[in-house]
Length: 232
Image (tube, rainbow, N blue to C red; front, top):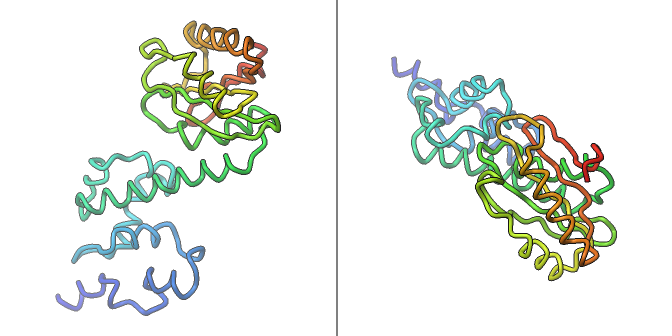
Protein backbone atom coordinates (compact mmCIF):
# COMPACT_ATOMS: atom_id res chain seq x y z
CA UNK A 1 0.00 0.00 0.00
CA UNK A 2 2.89 2.33 0.82
CA UNK A 3 4.46 1.81 -2.62
CA UNK A 4 1.19 2.60 -4.34
CA UNK A 5 0.67 5.92 -2.57
CA UNK A 6 4.35 6.91 -2.84
CA UNK A 7 4.16 6.96 -6.64
CA UNK A 8 1.87 9.97 -6.44
CA UNK A 9 4.52 12.11 -4.76
CA UNK A 10 6.55 14.41 -6.98
CA UNK A 11 9.71 13.64 -5.00
CA UNK A 12 9.66 10.11 -6.46
CA UNK A 13 9.50 11.32 -10.06
CA UNK A 14 12.46 11.49 -12.43
CA UNK A 15 14.22 14.88 -12.41
CA UNK A 16 12.90 15.80 -15.88
CA UNK A 17 9.33 15.21 -14.73
CA UNK A 18 9.46 17.41 -11.61
CA UNK A 19 7.88 20.80 -12.40
CA UNK A 20 10.32 22.93 -10.40
CA UNK A 21 13.40 21.20 -11.76
CA UNK A 22 11.94 21.21 -15.25
CA UNK A 23 11.43 24.98 -15.11
CA UNK A 24 14.99 25.59 -13.89
CA UNK A 25 16.63 23.22 -16.36
CA UNK A 26 14.48 23.69 -19.46
CA UNK A 27 12.76 27.06 -19.04
CA UNK A 28 9.26 28.09 -18.04
CA UNK A 29 7.77 27.93 -21.54
CA UNK A 30 8.06 24.13 -21.73
CA UNK A 31 5.81 23.57 -18.72
CA UNK A 32 2.14 22.80 -19.15
CA UNK A 33 -0.50 24.89 -17.39
CA UNK A 34 -1.01 22.08 -14.89
CA UNK A 35 2.71 21.93 -14.13
CA UNK A 36 2.87 25.69 -13.53
CA UNK A 37 -0.08 25.54 -11.16
CA UNK A 38 1.50 22.53 -9.44
CA UNK A 39 4.52 24.70 -8.64
CA UNK A 40 2.20 27.27 -7.09
CA UNK A 41 0.41 24.81 -4.84
CA UNK A 42 3.59 22.95 -3.94
CA UNK A 43 2.15 19.58 -3.02
CA UNK A 44 -0.76 17.30 -3.62
CA UNK A 45 -2.02 14.64 -1.25
CA UNK A 46 -1.45 10.97 -0.48
CA UNK A 47 -3.93 10.13 -3.24
CA UNK A 48 -2.89 12.62 -5.88
CA UNK A 49 0.20 14.52 -7.04
CA UNK A 50 0.25 18.29 -7.29
CA UNK A 51 0.14 17.99 -11.09
CA UNK A 52 -2.79 15.60 -10.89
CA UNK A 53 -4.65 17.98 -8.60
CA UNK A 54 -3.90 20.86 -10.97
CA UNK A 55 -5.15 18.87 -13.95
CA UNK A 56 -8.36 18.07 -12.09
CA UNK A 57 -8.93 21.76 -11.30
CA UNK A 58 -8.21 22.83 -14.87
CA UNK A 59 -10.61 20.22 -16.25
CA UNK A 60 -13.51 21.93 -14.46
CA UNK A 61 -12.83 25.18 -16.38
CA UNK A 62 -12.17 23.49 -19.73
CA UNK A 63 -8.42 24.07 -19.28
CA UNK A 64 -8.98 27.82 -19.68
CA UNK A 65 -6.75 29.96 -17.45
CA UNK A 66 -9.01 33.00 -17.89
CA UNK A 67 -11.91 31.00 -16.49
CA UNK A 68 -9.72 29.71 -13.67
CA UNK A 69 -8.83 33.30 -12.82
CA UNK A 70 -12.50 34.06 -12.19
CA UNK A 71 -12.80 31.51 -9.38
CA UNK A 72 -12.88 33.01 -5.92
CA UNK A 73 -10.77 31.73 -3.04
CA UNK A 74 -13.84 30.01 -1.60
CA UNK A 75 -14.58 28.33 -4.92
CA UNK A 76 -10.99 27.07 -5.20
CA UNK A 77 -11.22 25.66 -1.69
CA UNK A 78 -14.05 23.39 -2.81
CA UNK A 79 -11.45 21.16 -4.48
CA UNK A 80 -10.19 18.42 -2.23
CA UNK A 81 -6.55 19.15 -1.46
CA UNK A 82 -6.87 22.95 -1.76
CA UNK A 83 -6.87 24.87 1.49
CA UNK A 84 -6.64 28.57 2.29
CA UNK A 85 -2.94 28.98 1.46
CA UNK A 86 -3.09 27.15 -1.87
CA UNK A 87 -6.29 28.89 -2.94
CA UNK A 88 -4.85 32.33 -2.14
CA UNK A 89 -1.62 31.50 -3.99
CA UNK A 90 -3.47 30.45 -7.15
CA UNK A 91 -5.76 33.50 -7.05
CA UNK A 92 -2.84 35.90 -6.48
CA UNK A 93 -0.72 34.41 -9.26
CA UNK A 94 -3.50 34.64 -11.83
CA UNK A 95 -4.26 38.22 -10.79
CA UNK A 96 -0.59 39.15 -11.26
CA UNK A 97 -0.74 37.63 -14.75
CA UNK A 98 -3.90 39.57 -15.57
CA UNK A 99 -2.37 42.87 -14.45
CA UNK A 100 0.86 42.21 -16.30
CA UNK A 101 -1.05 41.57 -19.52
CA UNK A 102 -2.88 44.86 -19.17
CA UNK A 103 0.22 46.89 -18.33
CA UNK A 104 2.25 45.46 -21.20
CA UNK A 105 -0.48 46.31 -23.66
CA UNK A 106 -0.96 49.77 -22.22
CA UNK A 107 2.73 50.73 -22.34
CA UNK A 108 3.27 49.78 -25.99
CA UNK A 109 0.03 50.64 -27.73
CA UNK A 110 -0.86 53.69 -29.74
CA UNK A 111 -4.62 53.99 -29.86
CA UNK A 112 -5.65 53.91 -33.49
CA UNK A 113 -9.00 52.16 -33.16
CA UNK A 114 -11.61 51.07 -30.66
CA UNK A 115 -10.09 47.58 -30.81
CA UNK A 116 -6.79 48.95 -29.49
CA UNK A 117 -8.58 50.51 -26.52
CA UNK A 118 -10.55 47.33 -25.91
CA UNK A 119 -7.39 45.23 -25.76
CA UNK A 120 -5.95 47.51 -23.09
CA UNK A 121 -9.12 47.63 -21.02
CA UNK A 122 -10.36 44.06 -21.28
CA UNK A 123 -7.72 42.55 -18.96
CA UNK A 124 -8.62 45.22 -16.39
CA UNK A 125 -12.40 44.97 -16.39
CA UNK A 126 -13.71 42.43 -18.88
CA UNK A 127 -14.14 39.64 -16.34
CA UNK A 128 -15.44 41.63 -13.37
CA UNK A 129 -18.69 40.64 -11.71
CA UNK A 130 -19.42 44.25 -10.71
CA UNK A 131 -19.48 47.41 -12.80
CA UNK A 132 -16.49 49.78 -12.96
CA UNK A 133 -15.90 53.04 -14.81
CA UNK A 134 -12.38 53.66 -16.15
CA UNK A 135 -10.64 56.50 -17.98
CA UNK A 136 -7.76 56.26 -20.45
CA UNK A 137 -5.74 59.48 -20.71
CA UNK A 138 -3.86 59.98 -23.99
CA UNK A 139 -1.09 62.31 -25.14
CA UNK A 140 -0.90 64.09 -28.49
CA UNK A 141 0.53 60.93 -30.08
CA UNK A 142 -2.56 58.98 -29.01
CA UNK A 143 -0.53 56.88 -26.58
CA UNK A 144 -1.95 56.05 -23.18
CA UNK A 145 -0.14 57.96 -20.45
CA UNK A 146 -2.39 56.86 -17.60
CA UNK A 147 -5.41 54.70 -16.89
CA UNK A 148 -7.56 55.35 -13.85
CA UNK A 149 -10.48 53.75 -12.05
CA UNK A 150 -13.11 56.44 -11.59
CA UNK A 151 -15.85 54.53 -9.80
CA UNK A 152 -17.23 51.14 -8.84
CA UNK A 153 -20.87 50.15 -9.04
CA UNK A 154 -23.49 51.04 -11.61
CA UNK A 155 -23.27 54.43 -13.30
CA UNK A 156 -26.74 55.25 -12.02
CA UNK A 157 -25.67 54.43 -8.47
CA UNK A 158 -22.25 56.08 -8.52
CA UNK A 159 -21.32 59.72 -8.96
CA UNK A 160 -19.09 60.20 -12.00
CA UNK A 161 -17.12 63.28 -10.98
CA UNK A 162 -16.56 65.28 -14.17
CA UNK A 163 -14.33 67.77 -12.35
CA UNK A 164 -12.06 64.99 -11.12
CA UNK A 165 -11.74 63.52 -14.62
CA UNK A 166 -10.76 66.83 -16.16
CA UNK A 167 -8.52 67.87 -13.25
CA UNK A 168 -6.50 64.70 -13.72
CA UNK A 169 -6.37 65.24 -17.48
CA UNK A 170 -4.88 68.70 -16.97
CA UNK A 171 -2.37 67.45 -14.41
CA UNK A 172 -1.24 64.70 -16.80
CA UNK A 173 -1.13 66.98 -19.82
CA UNK A 174 -3.59 64.70 -21.60
CA UNK A 175 -5.18 65.98 -24.80
CA UNK A 176 -7.72 63.17 -25.23
CA UNK A 177 -9.75 60.77 -23.12
CA UNK A 178 -11.41 57.42 -23.66
CA UNK A 179 -14.23 56.46 -21.30
CA UNK A 180 -15.03 52.85 -20.52
CA UNK A 181 -17.23 50.78 -18.29
CA UNK A 182 -18.26 47.15 -18.20
CA UNK A 183 -21.60 45.38 -18.22
CA UNK A 184 -21.27 42.22 -16.09
CA UNK A 185 -24.64 41.05 -17.44
CA UNK A 186 -23.08 40.58 -20.87
CA UNK A 187 -25.38 43.03 -22.66
CA UNK A 188 -23.86 45.71 -24.87
CA UNK A 189 -26.84 48.04 -25.23
CA UNK A 190 -26.05 51.47 -23.73
CA UNK A 191 -28.47 52.72 -21.11
CA UNK A 192 -29.86 56.23 -20.86
CA UNK A 193 -27.38 56.85 -18.02
CA UNK A 194 -24.49 55.69 -20.25
CA UNK A 195 -25.50 58.18 -22.93
CA UNK A 196 -26.06 60.98 -20.43
CA UNK A 197 -22.65 60.75 -18.75
CA UNK A 198 -20.95 60.53 -22.16
CA UNK A 199 -22.52 63.79 -23.31
CA UNK A 200 -21.91 65.45 -19.94
CA UNK A 201 -18.18 64.65 -20.10
CA UNK A 202 -17.95 65.57 -23.76
CA UNK A 203 -19.46 69.05 -23.23
CA UNK A 204 -17.27 69.75 -20.21
CA UNK A 205 -14.06 68.57 -21.87
CA UNK A 206 -14.61 70.62 -25.03
CA UNK A 207 -14.27 73.82 -23.00
CA UNK A 208 -10.71 72.73 -22.10
CA UNK A 209 -9.80 71.54 -25.61
CA UNK A 210 -9.71 67.93 -24.43
CA UNK A 211 -11.31 65.42 -26.78
CA UNK A 212 -13.50 62.52 -25.77
CA UNK A 213 -12.41 60.01 -28.39
CA UNK A 214 -14.69 57.16 -27.39
CA UNK A 215 -16.77 55.47 -24.74
CA UNK A 216 -16.53 51.69 -24.66
CA UNK A 217 -18.94 49.30 -23.05
CA UNK A 218 -17.14 46.02 -22.37
CA UNK A 219 -18.25 42.49 -21.63
CA UNK A 220 -16.20 39.35 -21.26
CA UNK A 221 -16.43 38.57 -24.96
CA UNK A 222 -16.82 41.87 -26.76
CA UNK A 223 -17.46 45.59 -26.70
CA UNK A 224 -19.53 48.45 -28.07
CA UNK A 225 -17.84 51.65 -29.20
CA UNK A 226 -19.82 54.90 -29.08
CA UNK A 227 -17.47 56.35 -31.72
CA UNK A 228 -17.88 53.40 -34.10
CA UNK A 229 -21.65 53.64 -33.73
CA UNK A 230 -21.70 57.39 -34.36
CA UNK A 231 -23.02 58.09 -30.87
CA UNK A 232 -20.48 60.74 -29.86
